[in-house]
Amino acid sequence: MKYSVNVCVLFLYALVLGSCSKNLDQKPQATATNSAIFSSEQGLKLYSASFYDALPFTAANPSTGEAVRGDDQYAGADFGARNSAPTYLQDGAFNSRQATGWSTTNWTPLRNFNYFIANLGAPRTGITEPIRLNYLGIARCFRAWFYYSMVQKFGNVPWVGKPLEVSDSSLYATRNDRTLVMDSILADLNFAAANISATTDATSSQITKWVAYGLKSRICLFEGTFRKYQTNYNLASTANTWLQNAASAAKAVMDSSGLALSTAGGTSSAYRNLFISASPISSEVMLSVVMNQSLSVMNDANWYFTSATYGSRYSFTRDFINTYLTAAGTPFTDIPGHDTLPFAKETVGRDARLAQTIRTPGYTRISSNKTVAAPPVFSYTYTGYQPIKWCLDDVYYDAASNNTNSLSLMRYAEILLNYAEAARELGTLTAGDWTKTVGAIRARAGLTGGLTLPTTVDPYIQSYYSPVASEDYGAGLTISDPVLLEIRRERGIELCLEGFRFADLTRWRLGTLLQRSWNGMYVPALNQLMDLNGDGVMDVCFYQGTQPSNVSGVTYINVSPTLNGTTNPMLLSNGTYGEIHWLDNVKRTWHDYKYLYPIPYSEILLNSNLGQNPKWQ
Image (tube, rainbow, N blue to C red; front, side, top):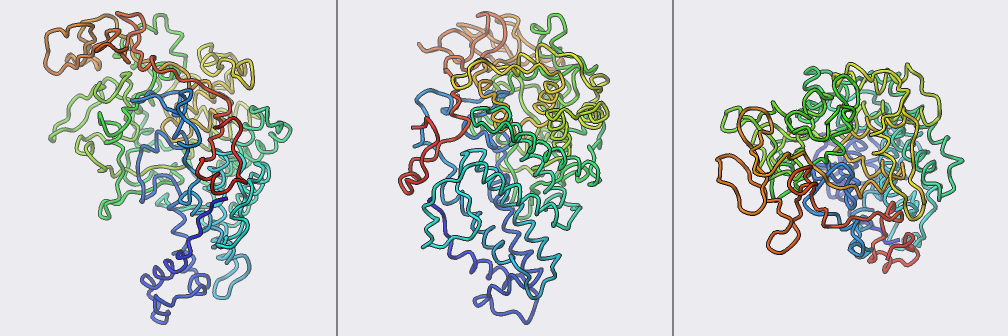
């Protein structure tokens, strides 16, 4: 294995200790020793602060592009269109030479964790045993998180449980089987949950006992369902053990943490407030990255989602938007003529999260100190379903990394969904459990129905989550359990743009969803001025050939079959009317071997013992 050995790390932390401590008896910073770090709680606290740089959305890289990509960095997600089709899904366009994720930078945090763990492996003079175990638990929680992300991406990886040195033969080790690595991750999580002492953190920016339990529920749910549905691994017999661990960890959070779904702001804004607040809403947000304007640590959410060039013009698809229920808790797709409803009508009377996730009628922004209507802007969206989930409602934030809103990494709502899914997979979910989990999430979103355990299958959601046949597994994986289908619906809606989607598709064995067409809102006719938010002001017009006479404020979009002799990437499904379709001319193909990313070719050249994941070139 090619592994980063940063021989300077201890000296750097000695400098941090030397410059920050108020202890007048300390050694000069140039001569700070191992004991200065590992013989005081202050030393442990300062050192462990470095662990947080390994998390997503860190101060070093607070890009909300990660909110879209997350672990979806190559393949994207089924619910969103982008400015270009991922090369990962184009035949012949992606191989191990383009792969990333295994460089020295990626592995560097592990040595940091392991050095800390090794030095706290036995009682130390100057710190009490509970303090030692607490910080050891924090380090092992971070190591578990690190390894989980690597197993998600690459499957088998080398398990390294000690700080390697330059001469260590383990630098060129083979990869360990995922079962060994996952068992080791679980051991780390169990230790962390048992020994981390903090149970609350008003800033929601530190690892607590309940974050450890929450992470355990996330990881065990992933592994349990992966082993159940990815049957080619022959691990289905062990799936329930992981699912039981997921359910028990989530239940511990539910029963003992004191966390709850936030209702601050009421039905119309409680959900979105979780993503636009500068200070995390700590009643629900369990872990987040907090921005600091005075230190110029800000994120780029507005810039990413409201730029024609900087971001990917990320846009939700109509197929996904159709999964949002009506406010009465009934399927939107049961409404006669739902498929030809114009945007201004299809987006009203729905689950309140829809209007807190995309621009819908009534959405406004601040511009030049004035509140103005803000319909979808086709300079920033391809489908009409433009995200607002992470965006602040002032154009001031649009032009650079100006955003001050905190970025959540774990929420109580996820834990409720983890419990509901794990318990249902085990066959133990009760009607009362449903009310406390999915039912509670829906109630927060203003739904008046759909709050009790479902007994019938919604054909639309079953069709959505039942993909076509794939090359390695044959026939598509049809799910007929109405409860599991509704849980999947909720997980997609509640957690969209939070970086979970590719992991979910992987563990459910639903990679073929990534082939779905990128469709958008319904356009009734060409040359028709359309008012997208019902305010009487026209916003967009679709045409073919020569543009109609210009009307101020209207965006004109040419949907002719060809533009300048090439296929137009934006068309209407029926030629002169119908749903918007974006990039149907670029074929996206799913292959089952892509559930695992390739080991980068450059890394195999450095360590041939790594081998390559099956079928990757």
